Amino acid sequence: MGIETTVGTDGITEVVMNCPPVNALTVDEWFDLANAVTRAGDDPECRVVIVRAEGKGFNAGVDIKEMQNTDGFEALLGANRGCAAAFSAVYDCPVPVISAVHGFCVGGGIGLVGNSDAIVASDDAWFSLPEVNQGALGAATHLARLVPQHKMRAMVYTASRATAAELHAWGSVWQVVPADRLVDAARELADQIAAKSPTVIRAAKESLNGIDPWDPKRSYRFEQGFTFELNLTGVSDELRDDFAGTDKATGAAPQSAGNDAGNDAGNDDS
Image (cartoon, rainbow, N blue to C red; front, side, top):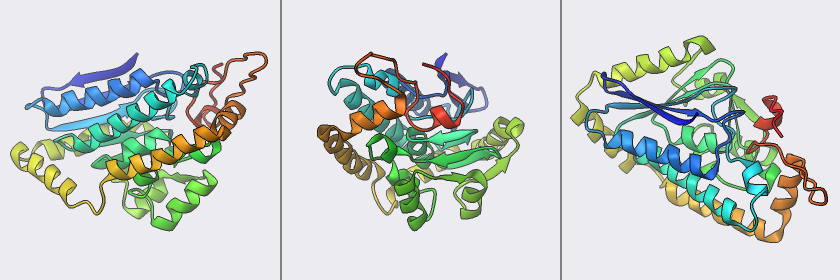
């Protein structure tokens, strides 16, 4: 378990998050994900990368349990750098990256999906950026690539959700399918891309990144600066403890989830 890679003979590489119970990634797993996507794109035989997940949902962001059980800011800094590395790996991958999303996609999952070239989702998929609930900010950069501007702002302020059907109606999700069809649908789209000239497709990816209206890596790092400020005030630690159920006096262990997916997806790990 962890970050798993399957290299196909058809030019399609799958990078799979398999980190129970809710795919809330540790610092090392965020970097593992970044490295897996980078290695896939560096392979001259690779034409398309599919990022997907096993388990209850696509991604639940960072592992709050790891963060709250680590003294100082080491885990916080590691998680922020790991997320930035993974998001950048998807964006900078020289071949198209397709995200295949099922269940919940929250927090860091938004960063991965927002930087993808195409998204296929199951009909039970939902998307949320509940960072304000844990005293953090970040990935609004990527949410703004998925939903309209004022929808994005309201979602950030309220930590509310958008469904796969809504994103499909806005044009950011390519296709919505039943959960048991998700991998097949992602591979069908990948097959269409892989059938094109790989030289042309790699040039197309680079050209599309070059005409983006803003640099998502730079804007995400700007957002992260406010997360660091909030942590220095102490409010972030308090909110994470409240969310995770940590009792500093007794040392009770928090849940392992980077956001509300731990509760909303039925995470009972402690």
